Image 1 (tube, rainbow, N blue to C red):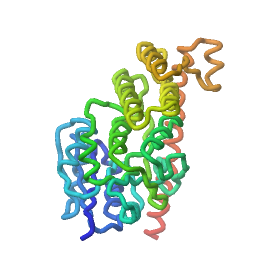
Image 2 (image 1 turned 60 degrees about the horizontal axis):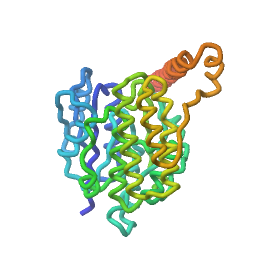
Image 3 (image 1 turned 90 degrees about the vertical axis):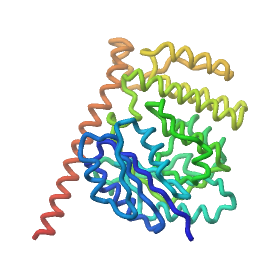
Image 4 (image 1 turned 180 degrees about the vertical axis):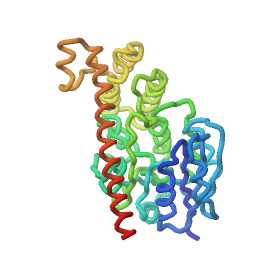
Amino acid sequence: MKPLVSILIPAYNAGEWLSDTLRSALAQTWERKEIIVVDDGSKDQTLAVARRFESETVRVYSQKNQGAAATRNRAFSLSQGDYIQWLDADDLLSPGKVALQMEAIERCPSRRTLVSSAWGKFLYRYDRTEFIPTALWNDLAPAEWLMCKMGQNLHMQTATWLVSREMSEAAGPWNTKLLGDDDGEYFCRVLMQSDGVKFVPGARVYYRASGTASLSYIGRSDAKREAQWRSMELHIAYLRSLEDSPRSRAACVQYLQNWLIFFYPERKDIFERAQRVAQELGGEVRVPSLSWKYAWIEALFGWNLARRAQLFAPRLRWGVVRAWDKAMFRAKKLDLETSLGA
């Protein structure tokens, strides 16, 4: 009998998108699967949408709001699969995603091979998704993978991974204390339980970018800054446990430098802690510099105003791009409905 794959979907206020996500899960060509949706106390129609899909394959549960990490932990506790496919409630899987990764796993000699896939961002029109390869889109040893991620400021989206139950249990539960970057920290622990990463290029994930509404958006939230810093400390410890060398320490210092823009000048205490960590690693970090687009504001009006502009401008730009894409999506949908009705 082929292995059972559990597709786990934590959902919160995702009523607008959940039906498409569930259809992409049901469309998986890997036949032996179970789909588990856990609604985290949504205030919209998320639970009602999920209930419409209930069947032998799709099971739906609800709970009081506890946050994304706790919801994922509950979904895992309810699953029985030999392999785990995490899927956020607004993202999509290509039909062959799981099957292609399972085929790759079956060809691997080690039971602890971790498989990943290609992924790209979209807003409303998934057919316009761009898949842009990075250094992580390769077969890599755990330490090499982490050094690429941290040193080059890269990441893999949550749904790209297919993880054996054995590695999932060894990694432990999602960290419910992290309000941000809980996925980055969790998959570090999964990675550490693996013998290495096998990249499966034909498998694809469509990530619906949500901009400032995403859990990963830090903005001006002190709670998220604290969570990000804690995750960064853990990342550094994880990499050094795999390889403590001049190149791994250099990657850690670069990782600190990459993220300092989110802490300075609002949290100079975290900036100073980062300086101390960098010194312990044999390097140093500098006061982060603004991109050229905001340097003229800094020159005329000072750092603080330029920093506020850097936070505000992407939100404004995101709003315009999102509104345009939504309008094009609705126009295309209307044209299709009109042609079908003609």
